[in-house]
Image (cartoon, rainbow, N blue to C red; front, side):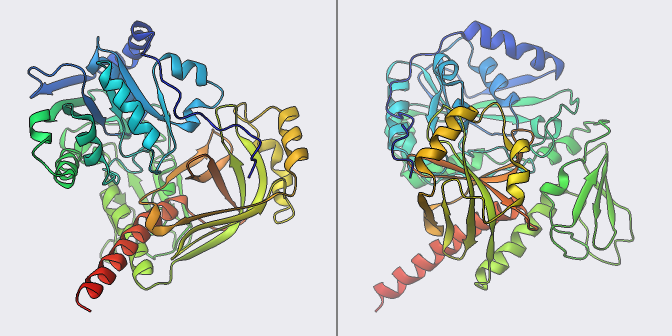
Length: 457
């Protein structure tokens, strides 16, 4: 599809980082505002090059990392959407482009170049902001990468960034006293003695965190009056009556539109039910509710009944020039994985998308003249995207992407990225993300079971 459109050159050599002083200067106001402190342990003798792995909760993660590494040069791995209409800037500050949740050999080669020239390779292996301030899935391949690079592995764990600026409601919530821990967990001599799987296990063990628990244990008070807004994006299923997609949030309150039950998100990050909890189930801890939703999705997957289908708006991002509006398509996620079918420029499947076109465009989309030129050249060209469940261990989602476009799932191929916006249906991209992870685990179990049977046949 769109064969005549250039793709981002993942192999182009990334220059060394420039503007380090400016980056740090721009980072310090927020670090001072939030009274950030960094504790370093087991860092004796650790100098660049090394691999720095960071947890991911908010944009402030990058600012803390810049402070923690100063004055060394570093190259950050950044997803393709970060390069949209600002490729020149990200290359200037040494960023490496990738497409999330794909097997990217070009990225490995770029990281090798970074450490070979004596710099720090920085990755956020969760590959997305945490949805509820707890650890997201880490790829099995991270241990293999450490073995290839043969440099120390350092972990930077930030605390307080999610509760200060949660993924579902980004404005600053005014948290003071954020903390970070920087620790070397593997040295080169250890890496050479361990299998890739053992290295991955060591990294996963170092990545355990829970931002709401941290807030409660440290008695961090958040008086921000809109602290619960957007929480229904994560907690999409009522734990009291079980209804999906009827949750709403406003101010400090979460509410189910089906049964009417409410919860107050306290100043210390606890959910206080506005009803008698002896009547039915409730959760005080946000991540516990989220994991309950996961269990329900897992049950659908194990029973073989999981299925979601809708009409969706689709954008493509083949390079850093800007998002291309492809029109509407059929979007399906089922036991087999993801399946998207459409034709470039098609809006017949969803007339309402025509009415929403003005709302959709942002300054990161292609200019109208270039968009029109592409539609004229490729109009009616059929396309199909298939990603088997076994091939994708997680996916990236966005809430109200780009501030106005809507909730979406982004699906990555090796040379393209697609942003899928479900339309005219009840849905939750959070459930789609949970299903992606559970479907992948289910597929792995199926493969394991088949292999076991074959061995004993």
